[in-house]
Length: 296
Image 1 (cartoon, helix red, strand yellow):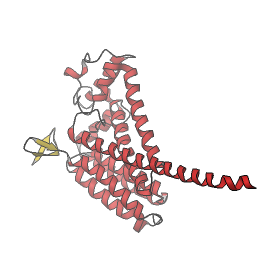
Image 2 (cartoon, one colour; image 1 turned 90 degrees about the horizontal axis):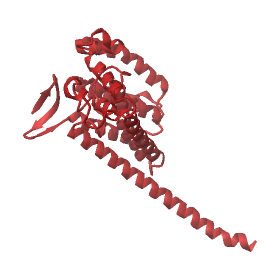
Image 3 (cartoon, one colour; image 1 turned 180 degrees about the vertical axis):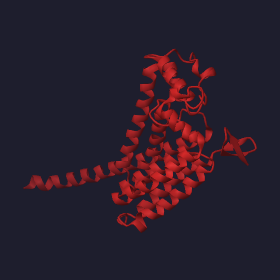
Image 4 (cartoon, one colour; image 1 turned 180 degrees about the horizontal axis):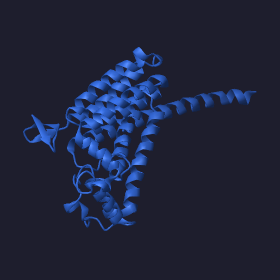
């Protein structure tokens, strides 16, 4: 059942169908957090009740994705958990202590595998080893540089043909930069910013606390992955396997992202319905009070 690609076993293959469990785990984690934080509302200041159970779940998922290995997904998991716990009211002292405790663990994980160490060194100075560890990011820089303001034209890029590896997944944003230039890059970033803003808007206008946490988690899921991918291909973050939502090749990722947007749309519609009903009630009460005001 397990399928290995590029040294990583991240897929389960059933006949003609392959599936990436980690993608489903992202959405499952968001739903779990939304439900758990809603049930524990008012008790988040307690480490035993509000923080520890979520850290245990995070640790279990982190270990599983590291076995694949898939460090990028582990980073997404951790970011979701910490931000949602902070928003839910967990004490900053507990979250800060967890971050400090995680630093040596992450350092060990990063230096234990030689390819991760190479990626960190390439991030600091890609030109030191341009033919090996720094090859990907240098080719990405060349793609963005070739695109200039308006790009070389859709389908006319050269970096995707022979030079830029994983061009259909991790480095698809570099192709956008080369073929559509700064203009196309700005449009793509603007679309993700708009989607994130609408997600936050749905969070604030949700009909209940569960919907609010769920909308926030889904929005962060898309936003964090987008930031990771863009940061990597532009040399702002060390290279890691992170796809660009809705753009990178991958059926499982696309399916989960579309499900996430469907959840956001449902929460948004419920929130708008609740606001409309509230306005209707207020308007009805206001009209009922007018005759009394006139009789005075």
